[in-house]
Length: 440
Image (cartoon, rainbow, N blue to C red; front, side):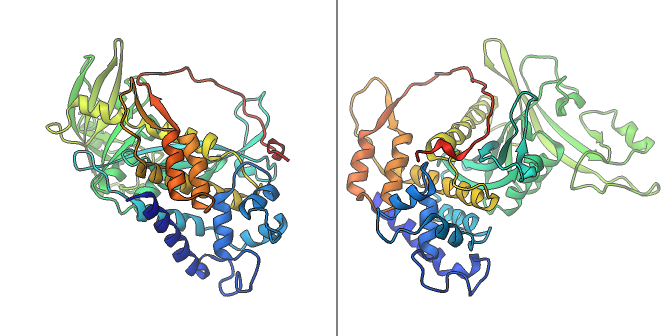
């Protein structure tokens, strides 16, 4: 696929989506039924193209400073007609169109993680109001939960939650249950360590590589008998029950075979209560617990249901290391694509723009893959500079630049890949986001 094909496919999906507009309007048959300066397709394209300036200046830029540029209030009235299901559906359609089904040892590699999104200050939206420390100003945050295809470098699914109602576990389960993907390896950090999450992954037929807490960290390893060795690889078949009978508790003494969990621990595959004379219900988890060396004096523990013959400990470590791409993708979404520059305090509009940014991130990854970097003898391997590519591809999708010119510009903006570079994370106090950050 070349750049021209990618543009044609993208435009085709936007047109197809617009033809189904009655499915994505708040008042089907009434909204977008009359002629306006911006129809349904025009409003959708404008939201996708929004950048960091004020809404008025963005509309002028998008309309190429036409005398027919809609005013900010008129644009807001139009975007208000679009339903909450519209942009998630467009995100799904674009993903299905450009899915390359790339595989690693026959599996899709799917990193799973979440990230806070700092949104404009809105003291009336209590569900998104956050204050991490006493000396910190109250501010508003959403939480983005995502599946990120490691090999394609694109976001495949997302669940958006508000700060006070966020739940990464429920978001993970929601994305697993609606996914049609097969032969997946889910790569998760320690935040997803729970019997319930593992059971859902197992029940969906997915494989997983999950980092878990060391013994003493109040995690799954605390309830198991594990070797007192720096490195090990052990298989465990653990039958879980809620039954608290004497017999069940006696069985649970075999720590690597049985586990009794209280009703306070969420586990969707066991009834909360059983009658006294009723037999115990069991759900069996099959997994490996693997401890691997990652540096001279540090180790990490991984849980997986991948077969030992094909996936020895070193390969599991490599798979988990590849998860880091989702961390850098969240950074690029916020600081390069523009997921910190919103044009409304309204939750519905913020959500629209989050999905629009996810779509533009994915399109940047897709079109960048179509551009070949000239082969020249260099000290380092080079890759396309993502920060520049985003701006070029936004202009390309808006029709402001031709595909040959866009490709030439992308080829000229490349950056060296310097392996094994790392910097300490800088912690900064979060402040309220107001609209004065944009150029007036």
